[in-house]
Image (cartoon, one colour):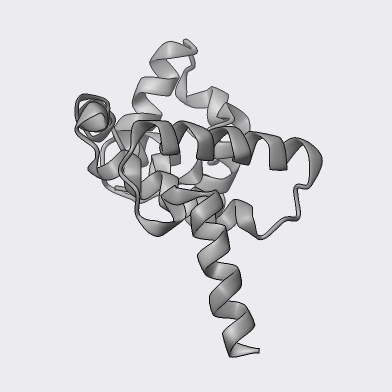
Length: 137
């Protein structure tokens, strides 16, 4: 079994060089195409997880993504993200009653006197169709 696993991993890295740590833009693009294909045709394939990790590593380290990553890091998080979403959607504090509660509680959260709970974060992420991580500082 060990020898077979080693040989299989060598063959896999040969077929998908990004898995072996390649820094080639072509290998990166090919890996993206493979993930897209797998998501369309074989969404349970474990290769998706392996590739996703390697793709994320590539995007975090490669210089062509540095400006994008800097812009992403500068986006507001937590309560500031909520404040921006409220502005973007022209919402008042009372509009968040289903996700957070009454106007008073929303006000306390916006003024950093109380924190968003896990339930608040989940409800807000669902409402705005954004990742829950957006609301975590």
